[in-house]
Image (cartoon, rainbow over the protein chains, first blue to last red):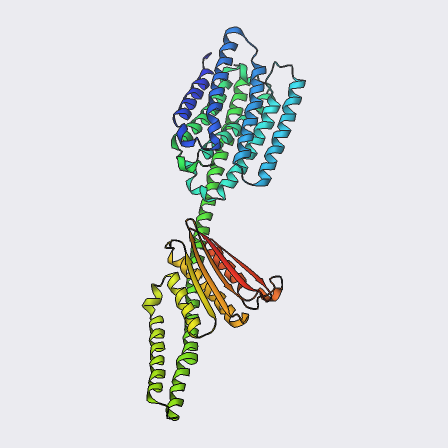
Length: 214
Length: 248
């Protein structure tokens, strides 16, 4: 059971490699930033896991900082792909609120636990922004070719992952469970990660260059 | 893992699974519904486009009939009347012959112009040239037609719309503007076609409401229909200028 969490790292590595191989298809779009992002996620997650396993290293500080950065990365991506002015403004507003929440969370926290409230806040915003993006997508002719659009698959992966993560985090808090220390609960986490990376992989494999212009 | 943990694990996993399934189903339904709605909308737009083209065709035909009627009355009719007067006045036979020859010539031109086959396959340039020739022949207005750049073939349906717009402009010029000159320019650039029609007539104040009725909105809507842009500039006593720009 001890090595089960490394399954996630394997998934991350496969996704990052597939993203690298298919880079040509989306190098002119805003999705190109997902390539370094996925590699950083893999390297960081993998090294943190090893450090924690071998030296009982306190990884929460790094994890929490990384969660903050990845949410900001997502917000930035949505800011660049959303077209309507109102949606763009709301993205900025959400990012601003999130930064305030995570900073407050950092100050109040002793850096020895996971910043779950910040995570849930950030995740709710992500779900809303994905909703905006889907709404915009559904109102253009791109709807006839969404399966070839990388941004659609990435947004789908993100929304399914976070829509599952929100109740998972809230309920484990509610039942007072330390999910990160319990192998059984890791299964849910791994399943959600599988959904996330599987949709990423489908997107990278299926996307066609001419549909990824912006 | 104690019983309580198992219980909470089951609850959490079923809630997560449930929410995931709901999200997936609603996303699928949402996209499916939007896709169908958009398909329907495109279908409707296509139908509307076809209807507008037919309408423009009918209007062109009506205008042509009106022009024939004018031409028969004002041109050939006048010439034949002249021949009759010449006959009554015992004018020299050569004069009468000349008048009759002239009327025959006009009749031939007219008959060639209204041949349905000729009308059907006419290009925009040919249609404008015929119209301009008619104006000059009947001395309605002194007209000039210029083509600039390398001619590029555009869709016949779009040509019909452009011609109808121009025809509407000409008819306004003749009926209302009291102009003496009419200039038409077709400018083919590599990525753009610009059509400019200009008269030196009375013009009108664009800001005054009662001028919006004379087909200006119609011209703009028609242009929009084929993704072109029509602008009309006019000033009292300085004439009117219509510009159509179309991306090739």
